Image (cartoon, rainbow over all chains, first blue to last red; front, side, top):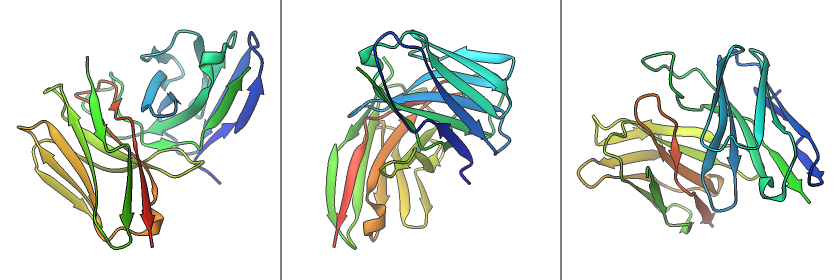
Length: 119
Length: 111
């Protein structure tokens, strides 16, 4: 079984619909991330979380929201999907050590992604 | 603006050859430089990383070379194999700030 599992793997939906992408992990890591990948671009950070009570915006959080239901679960929602949110979405976890508990840190283990198409 | 510029966009190398992917950065505060490997249909995986206190780090056939004065770092894959065919991303950050990713290099190893 995969350490970081994303569901669904593929989703096609219409503009204006609410969509939830789910992520669960079995690695026991506290830090979880949501990234977006567009063709020809690197990964852009949407949100990140250190625990269920600590959620932080990344560089492109507008139009997205997240929920950390448990240490192992981190969901990404698009409240009203728009076509330019069509992309590949990745969840990631990390327990790489760093100097303090604040700050973003570096993602270590990624899920296999959700390919989202908004028509 | 914090940027990491990656080149080339795509690369074709013969089996057994050396694959070289280059990245250049602007922010001199960057102190962590990882490389990620991504196979089709999969998420990226952390491959190897370096900090600026060393000029080179080697793990198996993968080597990061780091040139602090030129603000450049590169990934070398020795004895490249078809199984190395993937997209490679460089990245950089400092302290606990978010990673800034390069735009990726699609590497194809041909027999």
